[in-house]
Length: 276
Image (tube, rainbow, N blue to C red; front, top):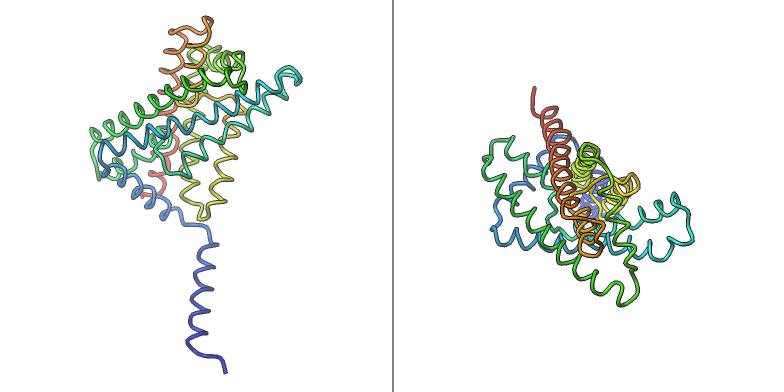
């Protein structure tokens, strides 16, 4: 005869496994997003800034890998194939940041607004949090740019031509195109945060990160942090990328990313779940 305690434990494990495999309800995802947003508001400013600084460094590995791919293959591949190869390098930095739980601005544009919509915090606190994360990301990104600018050509894993190519691909458009492209990128990054919360396994989260960021890279959409590293690298390495080019990119990419994450993810998701 089977031990009743054994049967009970086995049934409990089965229930947990079934629940684990079942997709989360939309209300559960929203509640977890709000809770995650509140955790960030409750962190110290110093801790939040350092985590954001780390994210700026870590996401730079996307630029490093794309630069290595460009340096290896730009003379042997046609333009379309090269663009595809570069897109495969785009997700790596996002995997480091998101799975490693560092703070990336384009995730927080959507995530941090939810507690504001829920009336748990005020708009002033939102702008303080955004400012800390954004500045930390940029400072970390600038430092990473200087590092690979110095050691990339010296060691031989990146050619100087890669710096200009990556930057030029970001700044060659007019401001309106950059702005609309950045809205799409911010929208996708907001959806990425939503999908990460919906996923329950690390491997599932990594696959979601790869899928979403690969599309951003392949489409050449403008991400205000990764793009800042690319354009800043071009600025410090080539006279063909000016300070005006950098400021044009940074301004419109940032505004577009914010609107994409706030309007098309936070407001819409919160409205259709909470508003009756």
